[in-house]
Image (cartoon, rainbow, N blue to C red):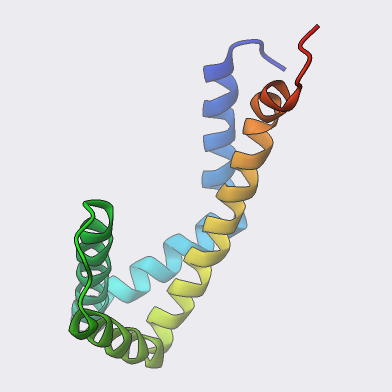
Length: 118
């Protein structure tokens, strides 16, 4: 294995791009965006999601009305088979990335958990 950390990162990127999980996600994404109605529904869902995340990160309070609207939108998009499949694939890919992050961060975690570095 290369000692160059960036070479390893680019190699990991290539493996991810070539993985069945990523190819499936890519296929489902294209499927959702191929249909204008489904695309619009999905984009509306993403916009609501992003707005709520931005409010939360900036410390603004999310109203009950916004929560209700988000829940209705989630229920609606989950009824669309293409979007539901895409969301499931996104969740699986997110879990994979999270697991990879844990592996990558393990040396730092071990370093900082060692109370006696000698």
